[in-house]
Amino acid sequence: MSRLPAPRLLLSAMLVCGLAACSGGDSAPTKEPPPIIKERQANFKAIGGAFKAVRGELESDAPDFALIAAKANDINARAQQIPNHFPALTSTEDDYDTEALPAIWKKPEEFKAAAAKLADESAKLATLAGGGDKEAVGAQAMAMGGACKGCHDQFRFDDEKK
Amino acid sequence: MSDTQPPLAARYRATPPDVSVWDPLLRLTHWSFPLLIPALWWTAENHKYALHKRLGLVLLGLLVFRLLWGFFGPETARFAQFVKGPKAVLAYLRGDRSAGPAVGHSPLGGWSTLVLLLAMLAQVSLGLFAGDPFDGATGPLNGLVGARLADTITELHETLFWAIAGLIGLHLAAICFYAAKGDDLLSPMVGGAIPPAEGVTGIGPTPWVRGVLACGLAAGLALWVAYGAPPIS
Ligand code: HEM
Image (cartoon, rainbow over all chains, first blue to last red; front, side, top):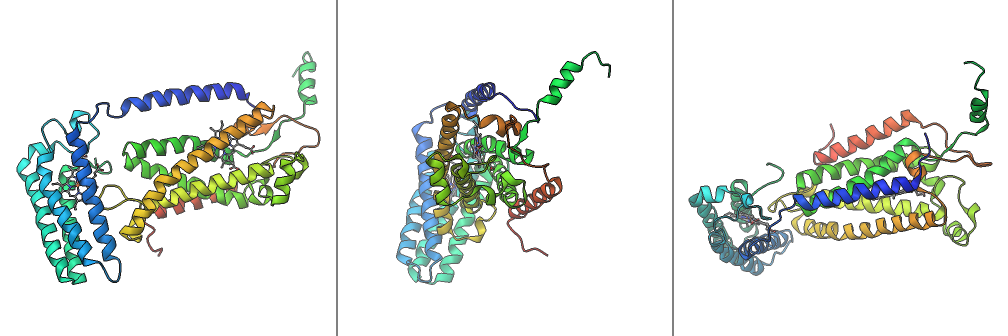
């Protein structure tokens, strides 16, 4: 194996890195997203956080059912917001950093129904949490999880499925 | 063949061969890091999780290989050769070059090697459990921990990256520091060898059989983890 002169190596490494940095910048979405995209993503993020808190509570021996009910109500209120957050030209095809698939605008009724289903399931969860039956609440939490998955499978971009 | 050019051949014979210090597998593993770490960062930033996960598993395999190589590889790859106690490190810092081996990592470089490898291993391991099944991508072992723990792990996975970036910065700064002192560490890490020097012998031939076995074991472990670590048999 031969020796190699370091300065030449460093120079070529710097060139490669420079090129990589330039090309990396290009392929990311370029447009600044309109406020509505940020708003809906923040809404989903809060839904995600609330559902995580619910599942976290259900992992303990004595779950705080009042907290679960509060989180379920929060999800319920946010689910009702979902249909207002998807104006035209804000899908993955519009070069924004979003995971909203064009299917949302192709099947608007189904999308609304999927949001309504989450509202339904979260309302049921809030009611059941008042009863304090851990098993029933756990089952309903998973049923609500099915509403997330059902909508994501159809309407949210998933890099792993393509 | 003819004896018209003996001076050149004689000169070749008179020059002792370069001293081999880093074996090819160690170097291949090393140079995969500066390719993989930025790629892992970029895929995470841009939500390319399918690729992020695949690259992470490749990195896991490479790190497991490097750890195995630290026990079964050539001298300069072995932890036993380069992980030294505080006395040797202090002596080295005071300028005593005999505190470390003639070839391979210095007592200080040995610790930086260990810390870099362990930090990357910790990062990859956290990634295996990270994510949330109701929010997109999850590591292959996410199902083995609860929602709360997974959430904490995900946050750690995000934070630890910056610690690793800091360590890499330190790593590059150290190499520049030595280069400025006229000590070229980069060329041997690329080419594997240093110029001949009096009384310095390099590593022996690469133990390829052990190398292939270690690669196989590392790849097997990474694949097993990729499938969610199912029970064996
Ligand atoms: C993601 C980036 C990097 C990581 C994680 C990393 C990690 C490591 C590790 C773990 C070692 C110990 C080698 C071993 O025994 O297996 C090492 C050594 C080394 N690395 Fe890197 N490295 C990175 C980037 C670079 C770059 C960009 C350069 C060159 C500019 C470089 C130059 C070297 C050199 C010269 C050594 C040998 C140091 C010595 O002689 O003791 N590394 N690196």
